[in-house]
Length: 340
Ligand code: TXA
Ligand code: MG
Image (cartoon, rainbow, N blue to C red):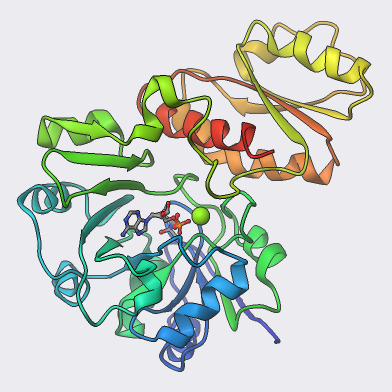
């Protein structure tokens, strides 16, 4: 399949291209589009055949449900059968934006979208191109992240192109995604609500609105080394990923190098500033400042992908504090570290 490709600025949607892409969605085709979190691989959420094609294009297991994207709060009626009080509060505060809520599903949503579950995940992105595209399509759009299954989510159009060129009808490229990690997923079918995936909206922000928020078992401290990423392959560069405390990262990289590995070492600016004698065969990548976790989040997936470009067989990553978006950063790193 020949993939159409359009480039535009995030704040200046190319309406002619968007109209063409929207027509492809209505015709049952797949289109990659930018959001403020990561790129999405979209199809008409009411078209079962189109939704199945998403799973095939990504190589995604059929039992992992998708997020439905809408452009207006009004459209929630077409996706969810019911709006719970907690979901209503969260939506009022955080939409449009990087928050996904789980609600009871509307019957018009194709069964594959929810992998047969009675619930549906839904979000309203704030990215101007995403909003214009969904509005032009005129239907809710089911979309997982636009990576091949097991790769980090694409945070620039080029990553989506590398993974999905020839497998989708079109790609809308609007450069770099502002947040760089996927949306926060909150199960609103229960009280108190439960955080399933940390993301762009922080746990602290959720608690500010709702008071009590439970953590999914996989996010609890005692589960951390084992649970995340065990069921689905996730966020992994080709090399094996090791998480290390800041003071231990450099020594860990050196011992792997001595054992014959091709090592990439991903560090904060602060730790990198203190390196005097790292071996020239170790590739050092800077993730950003420990004081600016939003900055680390934004470039994390791009850095993990560049480990493949340098063909690292081992990737040592410094661990970061778990406040704010740091919780999401560490969640993704743990998944990467236990993927192999
Ligand atoms: O930021 C994002 O959320 C991006 C952009 C494209 O919107 N999308 C994204 O989709 O990350 P995906 O498919 O990579 O992740 C969706 C997550 C998965 O962890 C899936 O298991 C969960 O949402 N999910 C979807 N429907 C669910 C449901 N009914 N119940 C529980 N979890 C659900
Ligand atoms: Mg994904």
